[in-house]
Image (cartoon, rainbow, N blue to C red; front, side, top):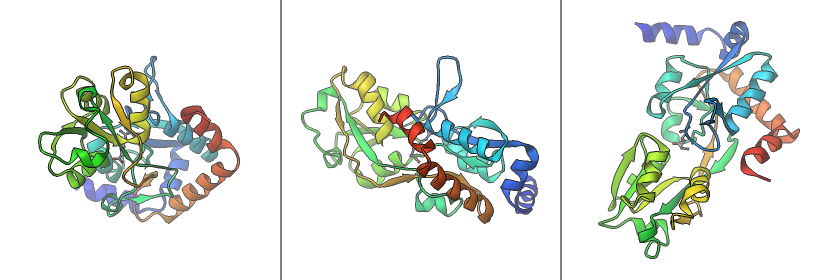
Length: 248
Ligand code: ARG
């Protein structure tokens, strides 16, 4: 019943109109994925995605509301109208795209490998992880998890609720390697992995465009987002935000 009401509500025109009427853009994300969304020392959610949606709300002339939502429930939350858009480093993949729409990609990443110090010598490629006796970690419901299951069927897979747990398991020598998106592993390697003797295989072995996700059946919102993205990519706003979080 509640589901039917949500579908009815969503079918009345574009989310754009509801955002303008409400005066607030509601963004769903899950903090903990560096440098896209993470919690700073004062408890604020900051990062690349946050700066982009701040620009987005400014361009719409509305306030911004961030809705921190667990990753494995983030698509259902969008479908039931808990927020207007997901901006959370989400990979555009065909399975998700059956349920939701994506704007054009705002960055391209891919899966990489962070190896525990003790196994650094024998693991030289993601292919070496596809073997008996190897334990690989990643995060629940992510494309990292999908890559391990699909491409490393011989390894033992260990799933974690958060990125940091998955990486710490490897740093602490309890698993062979962690498989995850390049930017996040690169930051962890620089901050803790390198000093801990870990090895970082930073050549992505999957192709993963990240995009903002919205509910289906809303061409007006999709059109606005794609034009907004192209504009920011060509007038310096995107570059300034990119350099702030990824270095120039
Ligand atoms: N790109 C990966 C995926 O789409 C991981 C994204 C995780 N994002 C987050 N905010 N925790 O599955």
